[in-house]
Length: 493
Image 1 (tube, rainbow, N blue to C red):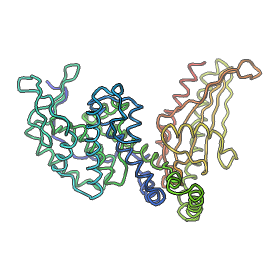
Image 2: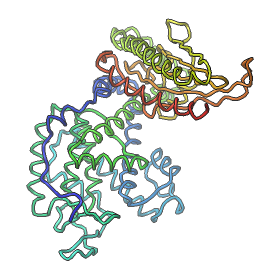
Image 3: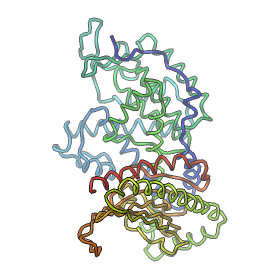
Image 4: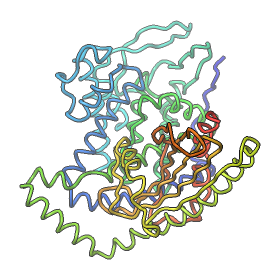
């Protein structure tokens, strides 16, 4: 008996449509607005960023399917320079380099087809699906099928044609996941496409998650379904004027878990994963270096002068006053953060008071405290590691909280800073902490480690966000980050 029984695909439910993606929804319009400005100031840099994003997607989609493996160094070289066989050594992958490059180029060509469909508003049809599948499997001749007696055998792969044999995978524990029987594939795809046409007004990330999951439930092709499904994500997002998202190899387990949650009727985890990845892509795109593109095209002096003129000109625009409204949101969130940390640190103090009397301190930071430059190193370092640009030309706000019990001290910081080389109206919060030890009562410090990150993902908000809209989301994010810091601190006590 199968562990998962196939059932006909279902449309977006009321519950699906109400999945809470508040943390990213207001970022959509900020990106669309910023994109138009980036096209004017740095069209080539933005195009290069998108091309590299597509190449990264093309590489990772095959690794997720375990078509090949590829080390990180070679991955970065191929992303930066293109799919050139000379960049791939035999030791960097588990298949022949020439075959790897063929597969990568096929996957890149499929994404390019999706880009063209989005640019020309080409409707998604069975024909487009078949075209995608044929491109993606161009260099794949066979696949495995199971006959009516349960025997596995190699069969020719039908390229650009729906399956003729069941393709239900058997798991290591012996259970089976049942996909749509071949006889029902045509009608199921018809239903999927008809519903998709009705969802133009719904959140594109939720629609992308729905389409991806329902497509994989059908599993209409003998092989290559995951690659086609991820290409369809890109089509939905591009049509909404958003960016392709990349599901990295390191996220494979989480990705599969969220698909299985969707099998059980909960689309939320998959939509949240996609929202997180789309947010990361947008924040990286906002950090495209416009000035670097200018300097490549003109002399250094001319580039600097033109760049400065453009910057001063943009600062005179009334739009910037609107974008800087995000600072008032950051200020309000700093206040909320202080209240939450005062409560948490007071409770922690009560719990450890049997050991010694705790010393608890709170310090606010920002332009209103003349210390906005504090923690710039940690913030910039974190942003660089994530491929983003933390803009310290604009206002920076933070809340620093500390607790000391005997010789051990915890310093916990939440930073609110702008993202992007230009003013974008987008800010993020990150959390980091440091543990300090003191040698004696005279407070002579003998050991302290560097700050370590406490938030796996940044908390993002925009000039269109209101404090009330994101209060609950901030509380959950802050609770998770603080738990990391206190756990490390507790291990030292």
